[in-house]
Length: 117
Image: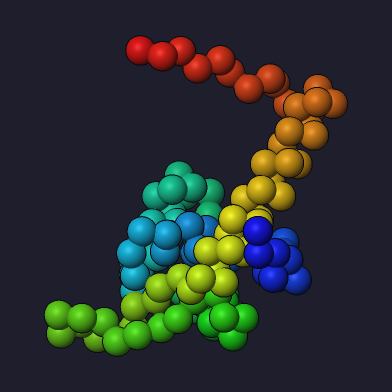
């Protein structure tokens, strides 16, 4: 396991959501924003300035790359780097461990049983 991204953990909620948005395909900023709003049921509605500040920070840290948008679109699309995937994995593990600790201390309800069907 390569733990070279630990110095970039923990992520802010917005940075985590940006990386999640980029797990499947490159996206431009507006698509990232709309995906975050939809995924969080509107709980997280970043202003465009806040979103692009976070994107610049993720680019600076080497977690995402920017490229020209295709099909005549203006602007840039963003994609996650290998380091970004590693940091997202590390942060996801860290969060899962925190949730497990909260459950073990009865702060959260036990995980619901899943039935095959």
